[in-house]
Image 1: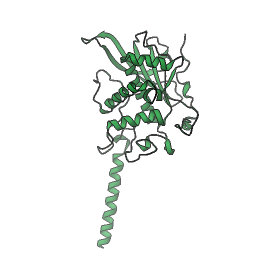
Image 2: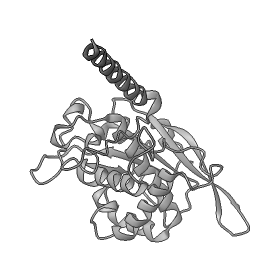
Image 3: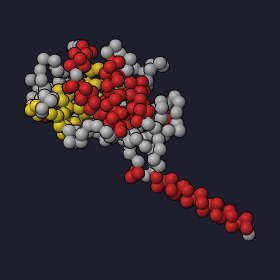
Image 4: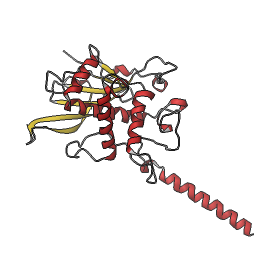
Length: 278
C-alpha cells in the first residue's frame, strides 16, 4: 500500500512539473522573434533551433525579424557616418545589392562597420539606447532572457544574429532607389525586409530628419512606421530605401544552403524590384 501511494505521488509530481514547463513556454510567455535554446550548440551556430543547418526547420518569423534589424541598424549607421556612405557607394558600384558578408562579415570594408553594427545591436537587445522618444518605431526587440530568467548574454545573442545573417543564410541588402548619400542630403532613410510571402508590400521604419538643429548642431531624427510598396518607392520624398532580403543562389558544399526550398514558389527579387516610374 505504501508503495502504491508513493507511486501515485511521483506520477502527480511529474504531471505537475510538465504542466508548469508548458505554461512557461506558451507563446504568451516567450518572444517568437528569436527562439533560443541555450542547450543546443554545435554545427547549427551558437543556438540550435534558430537556423536550418543540419536539417533544422526554417523559422520565417526569426528570419524576417533579423532581416528588419539588419536593414534598420544599417540605415542608422549610414546616415551618421560619411565614411560608411562612401564605402557603401563603392560596394554597390553599378549594381543594387550588397551581400551581408561584405558588410558585417570578412569583407575589406567591414571591420569598423562590423564593430559599430555589433555595438548598436547589443544596445538594442539591452534596451539601453536610444531615447524611446527618438525612435518610437523599430523592429521587435530580440529578448535577453529565456523563460525562467536565464539565458545567453546580449553579446552572445548579437554574435549569433550576425553569424546567422552572414554564414547561415544568404542575406543581402537591396537598394531599389540606389544610394546617393554623398552628394545629396536625403530627407529620410527607410528600412524594410522581404515579407517572405508573395506580398508586394511590407512594414518598414522611416528615419526622418526634421531639418532643424539642436544646440549641439546635430540633426534631430524621429522614426515612424511605414508601409513600403510601389507607391512608397515612387514618392520623391523617400529618397533612400534599404531592403534586407534572402538571395537564392547555387548551393555549394563549403557555403550555406541557399536553396530556400521552403520558398520555392517565391522569387525574392520580385519584391520592390523594377517598379520605379520615371
